[in-house]
Image (cartoon, rainbow, N blue to C red; front, side, top):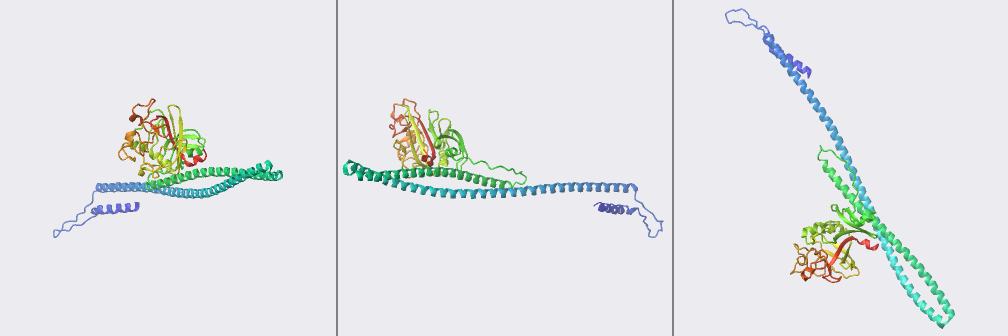
Length: 459
């Protein structure tokens, strides 16, 4: 570049000073003397100074351009390193996801194997119970025979039969011991199954979280100027209160859970010796108005430390993973109390959160919930889903509930402090459970809670 500038400068000086060489002018016929012209020295200096400034400016521009090229090269190297690290991170996340999937599949296979073993043990137990029943029958017959012989039909024969009876009794005791051992083994297998189920659900949540994290990081790679941040995979939350119990939580109170395909939310857990129950409703002092519209019953309302309704969508998200038990507890103003348990299945929004009772309830009371196989949809005064064509049960009785024909139960009605209203049309709007002391008997407290069906096997 310097040589080119020097050559350009020389050519320009020569071209500009060309007028300084002597030039002859010939007259046509006059014969005048020759004239010699020279360029002024000041003009040459000015021209040379301008060319030097131009060369200096070009040099500065070249130096500046070189610096910019160096900066761009450094940035490109940094960018290439970042892209390479992001690629390695994405590959590592994919490998972790595949490993978690393989582990979850292995655990599912082990669970199936344990289920088969448990079924075999149950069949053997049933067979042993049948054998035990037969042995009891034989024992009873032998005892009758021994009694008859001891009364005078022959002492020798009586002694022989009595010896046979003792032998059979010993066999029965041995059989009973074997049955007890098998029952204990079945309980241990069931506990292992419960723990395996929790581990599988935890791994499934971790796989899902890992996939989401990997997808999010891939999307961030599109924004090349943003810095990447490595985050550790979060610990999966429990899907319900019973899973928290299996993880070692034994104190009742507020916890945060995250059912499958759901956002985390807070619940009140009632921890008992047999497991953890997710409380979905509580009435105790009338501090919360339960005469709410559909939207409120769908999302929930009230305070988890006081009176509340958890929300139909949250209840569905907790219980949709399998068979659940609904426990209903209530008391009256005379300090009487009752509890009744139902095996249930709660459908989703598309079926208006219809409640299906899957079997006979356990407890001292008859059922006050409809046992229709198709289930009973939930109703509120602004969304009438009950089976009364000429009447809106929610308007008639107050609150939202699984109304069938308006008459058997309503634990979300108006809260009456004793004594109850004298007017009949007001009393029927209160809290009641018809199969316990009648339709117009006011209740003082109610609690509804759910837990996996396996909890009943331990109670």
